[in-house]
Image (cartoon, rainbow, N blue to C red):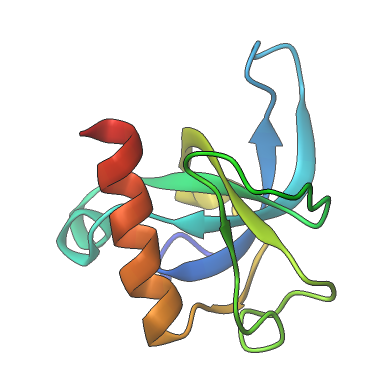
Length: 115
């Protein structure tokens, strides 16, 4: 997707998400957690991982997305407390966006894992 695209907090994008050991990456959905003002002026995005591998009970920093179809996800999915930064030019495409209640819960999750 062109880097001219303006992304918003809560947008769901398909990206090459890096493994935590930085050895490689895997194409997967992610949610944008950088602010709208940051996204307008910076060449990169701050994102959190999304997975369809749901393990109950959810652990600290995880949130089950309430409306997966609005988010552009094919399966019920969970936001994981795995944060990364990547260039906008690496975004493969925008999939959808979180509904407002999920956005509010995402803000709470970020506060719980970052303080």
